Length: 112
Length: 112
Image (cartoon, rainbow over all chains, first blue to last red; front, top):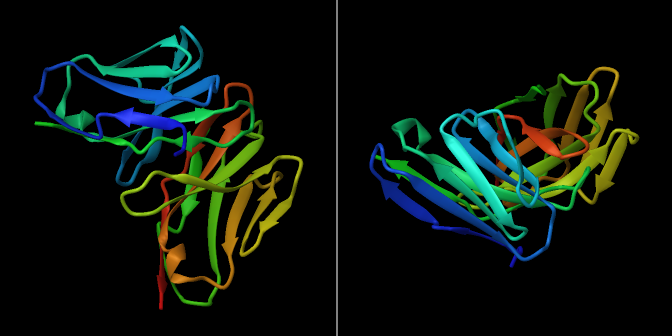
């Protein structure tokens, strides 16, 4: 496939609970990203990573944290889920400067 | 930060006609402009990109143009086919960590 997998594909969780989404790549790409997709907003960057243990915030990072302890894995954690975090979450990987993204299949998260 | 505006939000064309989607960006330092196609329920996929040192690029029925002075770039699809129906996203990126800012998307419907 595309060398990038996300898990879980679907999740329903309750308000206030922590949630972790996983992105796994087999391409050995340096750059990994988490985006959320919402109607009317397109894709918005949550956090990104430019190497193991090197991460930074995107435009909608409040309420989210990330970790990257291995090149192949990038985890997104919702520390205390809220209904406003109901969304489709996409992970993406990139070879680097001015190369396009390869996206994962997405995780549909519903917070009730 | 970068801001990307995309128009129109929806576009309906007859099969065989051309479709044009337009985007503007705010950061004159952006130097990479990819376009993604997202079919219903699928991941976004890169269809074409252009770098800031190029004014136009073509790939079969798809072409992109870039006007750096005006900070405009456009996607042109000729001889549209039903399988072109999807949501198209423009994006702009500043090199380095390759943080991409997306437009809000254009839903293209090709009517057979």
